[in-house]
View 1 (cartoon, rainbow, N blue to C red):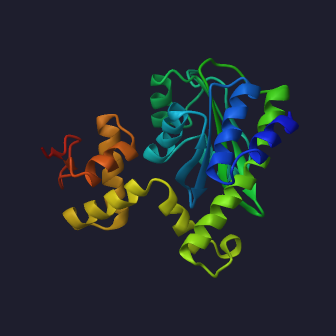
View 2: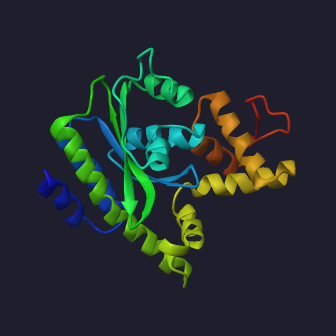
Length: 248
């Protein structure tokens, strides 16, 4: 299985294309319905840098919207997080995330940490429509895939560093490089946050909280709400109840 997964990564262009091909290979080899590669920094999802399809990307983004999910736990614990039956009465770890993915027809999720040098920078997220464990060869293959995912993420980091003309060591200093990575994905969220800050005269933290709250209240992802704000189709009110003010 390592050979097939390695071929998927090495046969694609560096960075996001390689991460995407790895996700597609995982779907074919690991008995899952969707796969995504996401980055995490300081306890928050920073972006989805590879996915097997649009649905997997959306499922992964719920973790950013709700601020909870297996990917975040896998990074914080540096260990595999396995949820073979989200509909189980014993599953209480991520109530908002679980409700959203169950509504999408997903009943099992698995996340494995991705290590780059000494940093745990993200996770390989696997989604399955039916409940059931990820075990045996499938789990072994997922661990291999998480190991191989470090290569495209390193390429993405290097690209971000070069694009910004950074002289610091991305992996040892981190902050400037992470700032660059933030600009590669979910840029609409950062743009929308800035617009909400200006409109409501609040700081970045509160602006993002308000954006996420609107997303949750209206059943959208943070990205969908952000695009509506950036494109000036939505203006969040100071006492927003989820309706916002739509512009023509």
